[in-house]
Length: 315
Image (cartoon, rainbow, N blue to C red; front, side, top):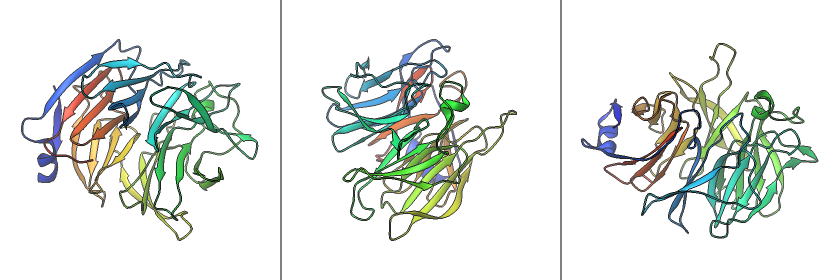
């Protein structure tokens, strides 16, 4: 079952009055297998996702087939160490690896049919990356193909990574020249990242926690200048419960974020339209990430995986 809170007719029309939701898999609460990622792979008609069972080191990347609902633990070679966010671009799946104390955090590209991985980037001028968290792409910025990713110091803060050599930055990587450039350097824990459909607005979440469990629960929006660099930072949204983790932007510019109470849907002005509540979907109620394709939402609910059918196509 699933519960919703609607604050607008727009959200109600998205969800419909009798939304269909199906439980695809469930496991023990102690071993969450569906935490991060959430990307559609056209070549295989699958959604890929990762376990990210921190602080346990793992290489668990899984897929769910959208035709059969079959779930498979993928045998990627070489394996991706502590995989986190991922995205699909130009026939490859790009996966963030958080590394460990001896292996640098990195981003790898995986062929979705052969499951062979290759290193894309793991350092900036010889200084090792921290623990890449999430990744997105642009093709309209300056007419170039760029990979953008967040690289917080999470591996170090959670005691499975080495001492940081770099700050918690957002990077832009030129897929043609392999130039890596820090483009946002003043966030505490940059996490989720996504563009709007026109690639003129970049959304990045900042998810720092203090010892009391409170902290920065903000999604920022940025414009891009003529050089394709983020400018004009402004608050787009503030989470009422938990951190804003995964971000997806649909075809009309609505921003979907995984938060402590579920999946929050806002219009491009930041107005909250409604929430797909997580309280009935997993024990914690926290939905860190999800995937959207057409009218299907694959909900990564920690120890459970759900498939929700919307009433209209959104992506």
